[in-house]
Image 1 (cartoon, one colour):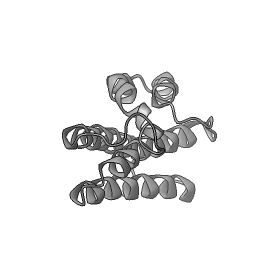
Image 2: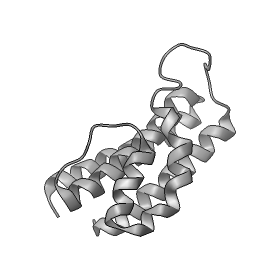
Image 3: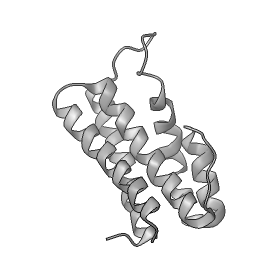
Length: 126
């Protein structure tokens, strides 16, 4: 396992920890962003592990498609990706949506963690 992949997964793990910690501080907009980032970085780690490159995108649906082309078990996360993708930008800037509901953030964290744990198992990281 290359050091680069381990670093990508560590960053993903840190985003997951951040999402959980920020949820407990009632910082829902920032928490949901980090949940999306966790899933994004984990998926990119898998793509890099298998192909040595990735496209610069925040669209988890596209990343799941690439992962699924490599390993069709990733298809199970298609709906997770669709739900998480908007959180890359939806609450980062002032706009129509100022703050997600707590339940929405809790679900996003759960979905991101499922992607993270599954991806980690595919990478065989300690």
